[in-house]
Image 1 (tube, rainbow, N blue to C red):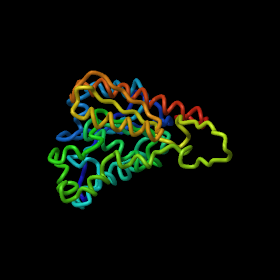
Image 2: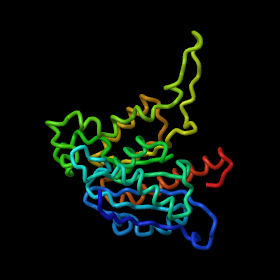
Image 3: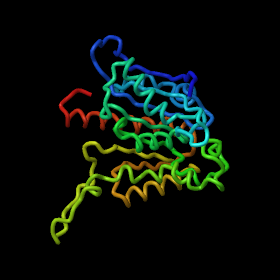
Image 4: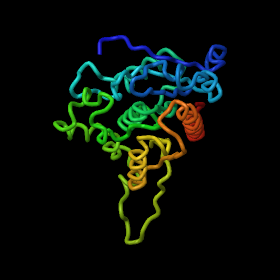
Length: 271
């Protein structure tokens, strides 16, 4: 995009004292009309202590109002490439990370929840776990909101583009391998394990019942159930607010820490 982009990088306590240890990374994406430091300024001022408690590096990029796509109509807006490729490479090169999908997770709130699932679904070789807090996981019911049309073109003239750029249209990318590779070997039904498999995304979705994105999140959950996509789905009373996300991110970090530990147990390598 030929411009400088600011990011916040939070290192856990002890990072400077441990000269050899490597840490998993959680990428936190902000919502519409916010910026790279919104997580610290508005949502979770105690994020450094939280990162230390979970033993992770936290990276908060600036996504402007991009919805974290590579815009098909604006070549100067390529935030999928920036966050999903360039930023990850930079962080791995400059910090002691575990440079592997087993040590990377991504989540965010609102526009950032959409972006986190969009990036992870399309780049499962980069991210091993992902989440969404109050995410705009289906943009089509909101054709006149949040400058989406500046990224995709007006909805009425570009319905196919909007269909292609909503998270719900990307579920085919994360269908379990058991479904994709299953063969009928006999007339007798064979049991299928729909639990998380090696190489499959660990997914957590969180939304408050009074949130205007609640219905699209419920639909995403139902579609994922239909396709047997393993995921955690959290529903609590709450609105589309920083207070809600301040609590929700704790659930996500616990989910990601459990994922990192599971990967360590499978590989025998420290994460």
